Structures are given as C-alpha cells and as structure tokens.
Length: 80
Image (cartoon, rainbow, N blue to C red):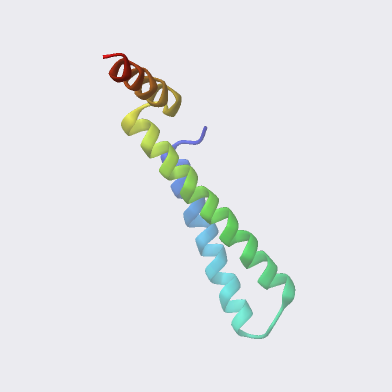
C-alpha cells in the first residue's frame, strides 16, 4: 500500500506531464498524445480513488472490521 505522500507526489508528476501533453496537443492533433492524455487521466483518477480509500482507512479503520462490527450490532438488535 502506498503512503499518502507517495500518492500525492505521483499525482503531481502525472498532472505536470498531462499539462505538457495538452500544450503539445494544442499545436496540432496527434493521436498518440491524445491516447497518452487519456491514459494519464485514468491513472490520476485511480490514484485519487486510492488516496480517498487510504485516508478513510487511516481515519476510520479497516473496512472489513467496520462491516463485521456493523453486522454484529445488527444481529444483536434483531435478537433484542
């Protein structure tokens, strides 16, 4: 699992590369540049998702434990 700082650094690097590609694309249509921009967009979106997941895990704990605890509480409420 990556650290938050590693994820932020990678997002920043990829964003800078994307800006450069947009400038290059503004000079003229190039399918390979457009494809690379799309790939970068997908990777950046995935990194943002990973960052949100990691922040939630750090703040609230492991998802599987939260779900298990909620199910146990639900069973106790039904039994009561």
